[in-house]
Image 1 (cartoon, rainbow, N blue to C red):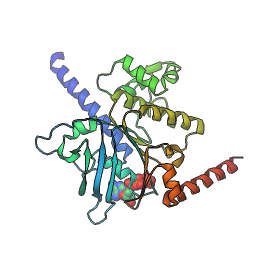
Image 2: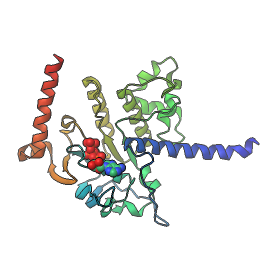
Image 3: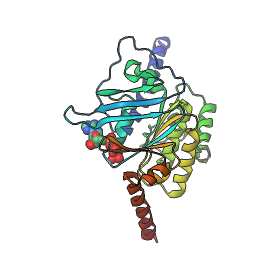
Image 4: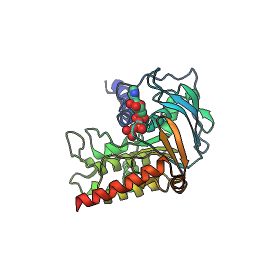
Length: 301
Ligand code: ATP
């Protein structure tokens, strides 16, 4: 009987791994039960990564056919480059991330990775090459070791601890009475926003993807935690093509390129210095955030 069940167990494990990986993505994008089923073309080949160049060519997209959201968006990220996407609320920043992960297909133009149209390749191979650090990580009612480990199927304890070190959460875990076996999630230990982000970073380190999507937390972390997380994110994005969905401009001043999105169109593109010199939408957003920062300090004092 045990022999009969073993394959089923394994199937269950594989299914769980895929489903939970997707759950995190779906939660990040607020998409549970809303995204349509994307179907692979028959015999779709796997994505072949050469360096991880990502490009949007005149991409058009709307969730509903009568309401366009992205109206011809174009940009290119060279292999290992870092692009930050900024813009007012509702401009379409998260939509860009959803399209890269192929939760939806574009309705016009195309998205390519190393020259391959992502609609022509197997979804599973696309998603296996993309890591996401969401704003708010979903934790499962299981041990913290398990929560990190599902970043890569079959990861052993040594690999899990190495990832936790890379995400600067190993010392926190070993300080818990039960260490890596401590239960987390709704029915266990509650982790802070910063700790949850570190779990997401550790998962991503285990996955080791060439393409990374970072969705910056909107919820306020204290400034020390934020700076620490920021330096960890900077470290893990080295040599990976990275797209950062940014809400605070202060965290992306060093990005190779900043894309300013406004109402589904690229309003401006350039480095922080170039965009300030343009004195356009970015410069206006920057000035506003500087003022808000000062007001906060005054309020705290
Ligand atoms: P924010 O900074 O507030 O997160 P954003 O720039 O990331 O905003 P998106 O989440 O990409 O904006 O949303 C762009 C537009 O698409 C918004 O007007 C939003 O209402 C709409 N939208 C987002 N998701 C859906 C959906 N599942 N169905 C229909 N419309 C949607």
